[in-house]
Image (cartoon, rainbow, N blue to C red):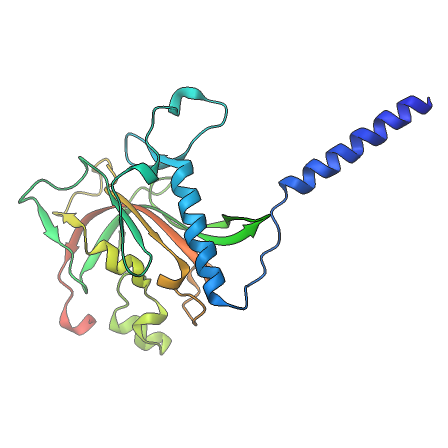
Length: 244
């Protein structure tokens, strides 16, 4: 009986220790914003090493148990560009509009975006910065499969600014805006067109809202949050002057 008790105690202690190892620490905002910037950059690198693009361009994590994805190319091994802001973008090969069939994306255009985007908190997890606290930001892939038109995080039109008594930086994700204009939009694809995602834009918090006041999309705070966009631009329109 005594031995059984000892075995149970040992197993309980092992389970507790393993649980503590797996737990993600509660986020504590670094006093120095440069520390947060370092967390962001290192968490982005880890994310790019642990994910790949599937046949339709969706970001997928490598499986630890399924070998079917072993030959997939991790994001970090794809051709990517890092902008001075720290924002990274990947143009997926074979998924861009053909020459002469695309449209330049203007800085104040109305865009029609298909895809997914998530916000993440980069934290220090036992000495390794990782993305944590994932929250959905855009999803027209699962459920409602209709491109989203004219998001304020790309361009906040005059009526949105007036209604909220705020200027454009309160709404817009600067790194996303900057990187998206490196892409070419398709020419008004019908909403029913099956998606073939063009690429990825990863925005560190310093190129998003950092620690500045911002619009609480979906009721969330995006203070110190990084964003990952996985998208296709189905079309653009010239914005009427009255909406600029």
